[in-house]
Length: 319
Image 1 (cartoon, rainbow, N blue to C red):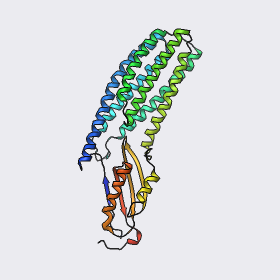
Image 2: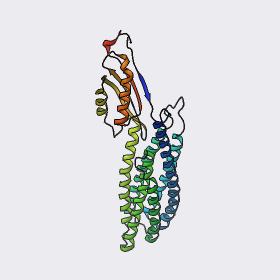
Image 3: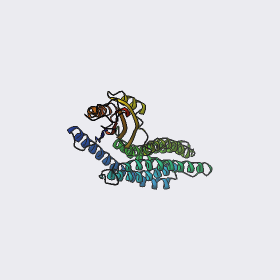
Image 4: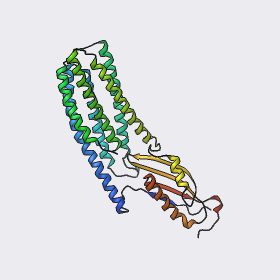
């Protein structure tokens, strides 16, 4: 008979078990509140510039300006989606959704990346058409509106730049960064047209901006998909974690080890741990050592460990 199996849940995200856990929970909530405020301010700025550039692109005939307006239209919806995701993520877990609504943040980030890819495809398609069918461009109007957009986007970048921010915030930052590059491209194109009259610079720079957007979007989509597929977080090495667990005193073997991401900054681990003897009284001590190791070395606090005894311990009485 197998005895002494221990089952430990260490959630580590603010159930008030310790002053440290409570402080960490408060810091997490405060950080998310700051991110949400930054997103709301950026949403207001982006929506305003979107309308201005849409009108300016139509009046000036600039593809780069129209592309930037389309980008901002996508950004407005994506930023709104991100704000809603933050609101849903604060809803408590229930009997059906035991992790709450944290994954909505990841779904929003994935949607942001896909929208960026679609937008980039549209810009490239329009640029190709402009080469075969050039159109007149009002470069002065184009430059003025792009300069206003550049200033507004720079403000948005400052608001959203936060080291270690969530995937959602990262997605919003990449959107605004793409807008900033678009504005720079439009200003450069306008200057070239004003000085030389060479209008093909407009679709050329639009295509270059589209390539930058694709690169950023691909990185975002890949990160979001990794979370949805429950891949091992990029900053962790599964083999290293396994080795560290098996080197812990009292551990004979570790199997069924899984590490995944619930949401940005929230990682989880589960494993079956076979102890190296029949002294069941040591199980609590082994659990404490394993929890401390995972928290201190790998920053994993949401942990589920199942202790198992070796086969030769069957029939041994619990002391």
